[in-house]
Length: 196
Image 1 (tube, rainbow, N blue to C red):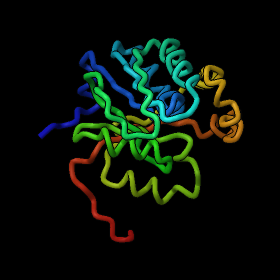
Image 2 (cartoon, rainbow, N blue to C red):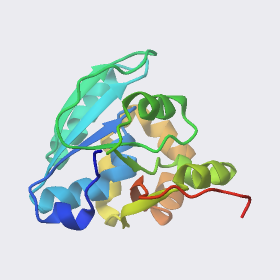
Image 3 (cartoon, rainbow, N blue to C red):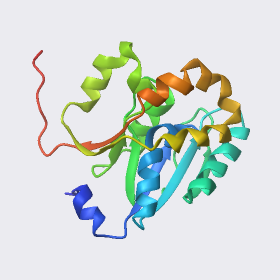
Image 4 (tube, one colour):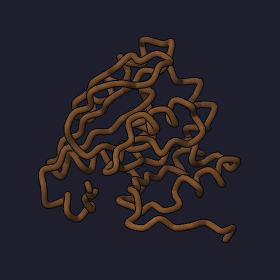
């Protein structure tokens, strides 16, 4: 049985983190603060972009972001198919799988027993998704929760192809105010939900 390490255990190791993003901006939106923190602590970060889009420029943007934060990067143009990719070695971190079909597919296809999951931003902030978020988080343990530094938003200019997306979600105010990141893992025991 593979056991997922706790954050305290990892802090004493030179750890490798492998963050899978279905789209070029998912690591930025959901894990930027963690990437910066882990790099400062001497850990390595590898961002794996599963390009599920009709815009090739998004792979270029993903690589530019990884370069800017000092992370290794691999891009895969998987189109609309199931992502069957070879992942680098390290602590695998996948999207929790909130709403967007590409996020759900990435989790369902690549999930392992030791995988961690990041809270998909901005989908986790959409009120109509509250029950889904609760269901996905049920039975998990928080590995890390942080509020990234405000300078995170300087990096959004890398994602020029997504400018209308960022403005749709009110990047300047709404996203900044609600900007937090959470990474979870499967709990040591599964909790049953009985409408409580």
